[in-house]
Each structure stands twice: as C-alpha cells, then as structure tokens.
Length: 159
Image (tube, rainbow, N blue to C red; front, top):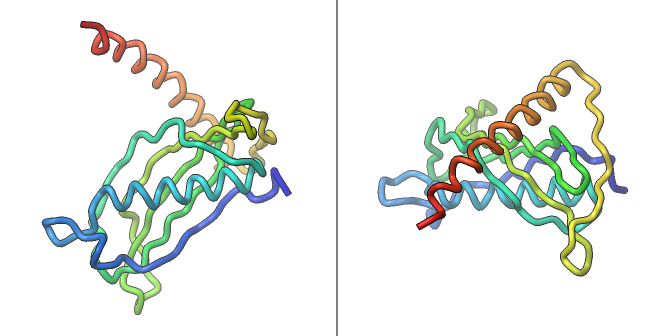
C-alpha cells in the first residue's frame, strides 16, 4: 500500500567484480547501488514506477573493501507533488563484525510516473519526529540551493 513504507535497506556483499584499479569498490558501483535503493524506496512509498531526476551531494567518506557487507539505506525526507527526496546512507564493514561505518551519503530525487511516462502524484509524507522535521527542512534548503546552482550552470550551456 502506497504511503506506508518510507525506508528500505538493501544488504549484500561487495564482490571482486565491483573493484577499481586501486583495489577498493568502484565509485560507479556504489552509485548504482544508491540508484537501486532509491528506486526501491520511492516505488514502495508511491506505489508507482519511479525515475531518477537528481542525485547530488555524493560524499565518499571511506572506501568499501571487497568482501565487506554493504548496507544501502534510503529514506523519504520530503515529498512534492510527484517527487520524493530521499536521504541515502551507505555503510559497510566486515561481515564477521556487527559494526558498520558510513562510507557514502547523498540525496536522490525520484519522480513517480504513470504508464505514459508522465509525472503522477505521490502520497504526501508528513514528518513526525524532530529529526524528521530537520531532514525535511534540510531538503527544502537544498532545493533552493539547487535552483541557484541550476541558474549558474546555464552560463556553461551557452556557446
């Protein structure tokens, strides 16, 4: 049922195929995992097919090693008419140890679409805890900052 499941965590092992030339998990692999978690979370919240509209503020804090257990957590932190802003945390650690450390964090915006690919309404998310209120306010501030950055980037698109 749409509007009920606000968060999801994907868990799996980092595989040798995910490694980069430096011997750590490739940033592109992490970004793919982030996109998968964002889709799963936004589809669960909206009950609709969703597409990625934006991924930003990606911070690679610590490396992920092959063989680590990886947890990619996505949580709705703001909803618009058809969009959902998600906070994403990636944590990893030795599977023999319960401790996980933050490796990556970012914000992803997903848009629910109908069968013809047009944006469609999503259930509103209303924050309840003080932390949820702070996350929603942060998402709103980030929207305003992205508008300014978008306007600034226009100069780079003109010949």
